[in-house]
Length: 98
Image: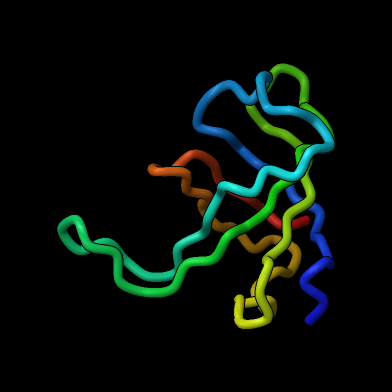
């Protein structure tokens, strides 16, 4: 899979995204595929670069491009309607692939 391929998405942020730069790849976000038991995460996780491409007025939602950086990531899941959570030390947003 081409790791430079990006997917269009809508992101619903847990806090106001107005301070997030537009058209800049954010590289410190991850997606976890597994579960947290106690304080220990079991499963796989991948870095998910996100580029906000537009803000949806009156909401904390943004349009964005998202992608995985490695071949081993679950590319087959990135289809229209698929949702996943972004983490940066805690859950910060929900991504829905368009």
